[in-house]
Image 1 (tube, protein in one colour):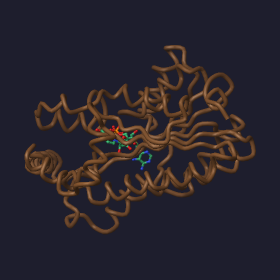
Image 2: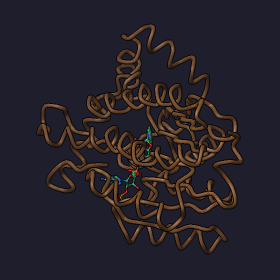
Image 3: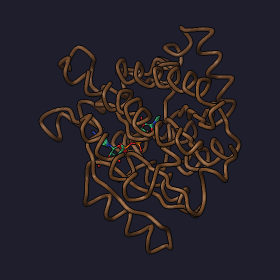
Length: 285
Ligand SMILES: NC(=O)c1ccc[n+]([C@@H]2O[C@H](COP(=O)([O-])OP(=O)(O)OC[C@H]3O[C@@H](n4cnc5c(N)ncnc54)[C@H](OP(=O)(O)O)[C@@H]3O)[C@@H](O)[C@H]2O)c1
């Protein structure tokens, strides 16, 4: 299989979490490659707005609203696209997020919901698209993970578990299906500026940390690179990301020490309090 087999005219990509943030930029970048891009997310109005902007710029896109924490919605989403387009050649599991509240302050159900969105949904979607990909002998799955677990970022226990789980899932998926023409890649993101949850935190806190953050469009470009160069893993952050990730694994106390030095825990607490004051309760990002 080569990249032309899953990107470009005649091919269909599905991008989850495309109603806002990084996902809308990934959808735009993939549309520039020339194939059809299906956007999904829960908010029909936001999806329509993104799709309409992309169409106005000449992209071939459509959208289907779906709540990916519901298994039936995942099955229906894939069936609809396969029926309408004949198959899904590229799946980008980008939808995700973290409620950003203390682990013990959330109910078990709230914690499980984070797991469902960030880990179970990508696994279920991959499971749904694989038979079609195997039948056509081509396909690529790109999963969007995070440095959260490696860096012990405050208040991300379950999110970190899900995102680290996604890395293991992608490695084994890639190893098992590569010989049958299906590839898988994982992008491991540090903090991202310009769009998405990281930028929202900057805006809320008034912090100036953008020097430590990679631009959102670099994630979109990395998705295309993962496919065209068939990369197993790409770390998206300023500086030597893969080396930093390896160091954080080798020295598990390094992440918490860096967070303490950067004042990350107190900043996160301020953001939680700001959100609670604004809404009466803490909100998902
Ligand atoms: N931004 C960063 O700094 C950063 C860093 C590391 C990793 N990441 C990862 O990058 C990915 C994109 O993040 P982002 O910053 O762009 O987040 P974002 O702006 O909060 O966007 C999240 C997207 O996921 C969708 N989504 C949320 N819950 C959903 C559900 N139950 N069913 C279907 N779709 C749902 C949202 O759409 P609806 O609300 O319309 O459903 C939205 O389109 C995530 O996987 C995130 O974990 C981001």
